[in-house]
Image (tube, rainbow, N blue to C red; front, side):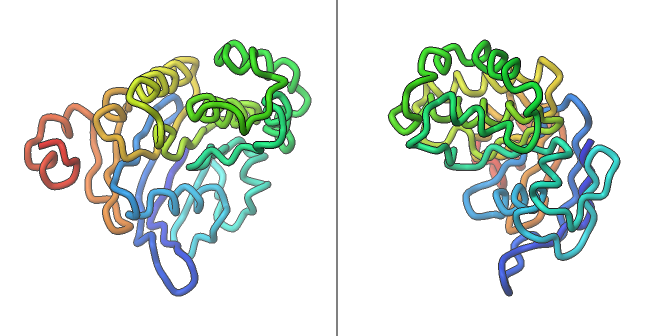
Length: 234
């Protein structure tokens, strides 16, 4: 579904991404792991058309998307839930969800609101509540629900567990696994290595704007050198 080859990008004179190769097959959860500041969010932004790709190739669902704007990429079904949630705090929960279908999925908006509410029953209870008054976990649910309103073919989740309590982190990863079980393809951008590897089909480890390691989670979990050098598990 997604094929990235030799992707370079950054901000101004600063090159952050230094030739990224990554692929995602339909139906997978692929985890992009790495510590803060290694380029994970920049990579997600480049895929979504929020920053330009300076070099390399990005193909999504069989189509070259280099150079397309963010709106065109959303229209194709590549949807990002950004780090930090970025909900609209002064709008209600329902209004936030409705805005998720502003570009894509508008025709099915009522049905999709029901689907999101079935996935997140707590949001249904708070449809009329201002989004800024929700708890951190509820705001993350709202951000994901808003992304689901656009009927994603590939959903990018950028640091969905950040700022959540350990109990809510467990709940969030269980939810991501359930979404994937419905057939949704997910790119999970995370610092939380252990729980990401528990639900991912494959994983890539980024360091200094480059992919240093990739493979099946079991391989990474069981290799002491990889644990010490890249994953911080030893």
